[in-house]
Image (cartoon, rainbow, N blue to C red; front, side, top):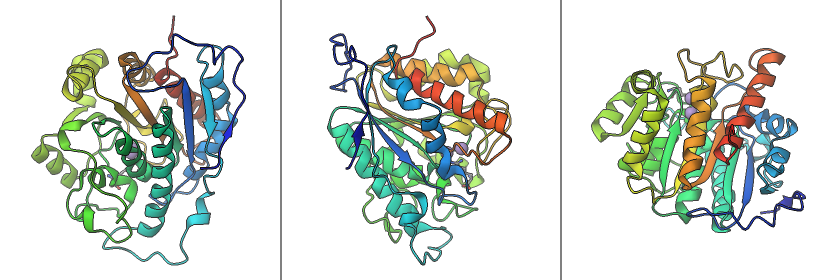
Length: 331
Ligand SMILES: NC(=[NH2+])NCCC[C@H](N)C(=O)O
Ligand SMILES: [Mn+2]
Ligand SMILES: [Mn+2]
């Protein structure tokens, strides 16, 4: 991995108080997953650039947070890995392209985790979630996943209606419904079990996805449960499910469309009735507090959706979610 290390504030290295159950260093490795091939709307591949331009990396290095930040600068531009021909694989669109980019994300996340640093992936569409989670799981065998999303992204090659792979990464991670035999994805082996993932924020599932979640007994807190219990109880119950003794490494895969479209307008598949600004931040804060969080994805920021004001709001809130997951507090 070619990468640059941005200069850190001088006092950052001198943070002897850094204590984390799994990370070895106060360091973040950032993968700018500039990719749109998992869905049809262009623009989402420029999400990482906008987040970085808004100052995300500097914010993580700031005096307040003090991380050593390394950007994977060699991450290829969106279209450079696009194959000349990418015929449908069954119903799946851009399978070859999604596979090669996800594999690239996989290596970068794996390398960051292997160094004991926090792996932050910014996207980019959520199809590469198969690479991020596979990458952290390859280092942390006992990984748990918190998937925050309006969607379950658990369609299989058989259940998908759209054929868009950003609706499928979880089924690949679990090895469901023929995913282990899809052309081009030979590199990806199942690395998760249904009891090790929990969903928060769901509200727009395809019929086949509901069946899968019910039949596998996957723990899911839809917006109904968030309304019923409040986000505080939901986070306690979610953690009790995946890490009752609070001793397992956790990967947070955060699709910004989990938040309400009034909060996050610049995203490709908005669904009304979503999480509030504070609920989104609370999820990140509560996960940071566990001292178990080893990786985060912030996905589906699409700067081409909506107006300039909505873009600025989306990007600034996106950065805030990452800062919360990395320890920013209100007091
Ligand atoms: N990462 C996302 N925004 N996923 C949206 C998926 C929508 C729909 N369930 C599909 O499979 O096409
Ligand atoms: Mn989504
Ligand atoms: Mn998603």
